[in-house]
Image 1 (cartoon, rainbow, N blue to C red):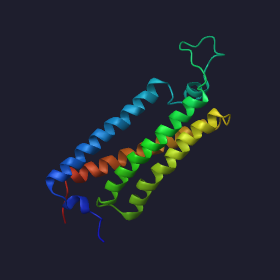
Image 2 (cartoon, rainbow, N blue to C red):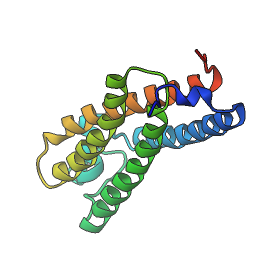
Image 3 (spheres, one colour):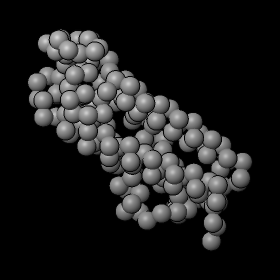
Image 4 (cartoon, helix red, strand yellow):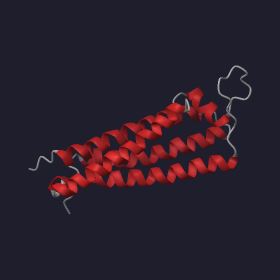
Length: 164
């Protein structure tokens, strides 16, 4: 079965449908990153403070408390499930673009590993492994770069199919 470049053979209307989906998906994804920035969770110290609280810091401008068991499980559960669907759908679209197979493999497998490392890392940091905040930063950044590259790849091939 030949699937490399299949996206570029789709009718214009289907490519438009896929492009609009990827744009809306991207808006949702990057809105989540705005939330991360809003909670000051884009730095190792900010991640730690967001989940473990800052009650001992008398000079804190915003008081934050350690997240409870139920709240942490809800955060981890919802993010792992939703991000799995996001990367499954986007990955399926990546596989039908015209692009080298090894790169497609990386772009479609890596995000699942990053989801596990990011949200598993948050959970382990919350449980006391404070060094996991660096793993969370690295894997979250890699996940974002992979999402961005994949979305651009799909969008470009929807807009300019370059049929051979």
